[in-house]
Amino acid sequence: MKKIIIAIDGYSACGKSTTAREVARHLGYVYGDSGAMYRAVTYYLLQNKVPLDDPQALQQALEQINLSFKRDEEGNLQTWLNGENVEAAIRSMAVSERVSTVAAIPAVRRAMVKIQRKLGENKGLVMDGRDIGTVVFPEAELKVFMTAKPEIRAQRRLKELQAKGINATLEEVMANLAERDHKDTTRADSPLKKAADAIEIDNSFMTFEEQVEKIISLAKERMQE
Ligand code: DC
Image (cartoon, rainbow, N blue to C red; front, side, top):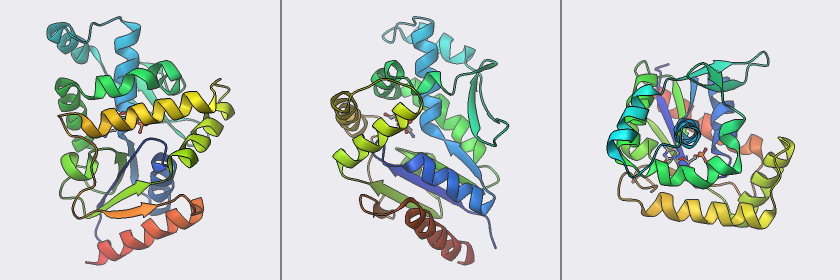
């Protein structure tokens, strides 16, 4: 069967990452978390107090950023930034609150798209994000656009944060998701939108297993085409 690229795009907290990771594991594919890349850049810029409105400072900062992904003992992919495991730090509310602003900067997107395309050079990749099917891999064999009701997304994200010991209220999470959706869909460079050839999956009332199975069966069809 031929190797393909699977692009999974959608709003924040739709369960794209967990689903994409499981689909990749099942198929023996590489999983690429493009949101983690934007989060790691945001974390770096915050840590180093880089002014976002200074193009030169921003360009210099981008040149200092070295991102990689390594598995921990349990096999979970961890984001590393310049030799530091930042997986937990990039999920904080402080990063979530700034990431959509950073992700709207064209220079940041150009740098991230370059890394993302490299991961797809040999196909056999499942990548989730906002512009994977529209900009990063417009030729992806399978494009999925995931959606879920806002209140369901907020509940799920809150649970995830609480499990990690991060304090937040449902109101805070709902407000953050609404703001990010707005910024991600209205930015000028690569806004979140459903690709014309993407298959929409609303997972509000689907189990995790159902979503994974649906994508795997679509993927298998595409592999045989
Ligand atoms: O998937 P996530 O919630 O971890 O993504 C964090 C932010 O990064 C999201 O609010 C928008 C941005 N992002 C993006 O602009 N393009 C992508 N391909 C992935 C994420």
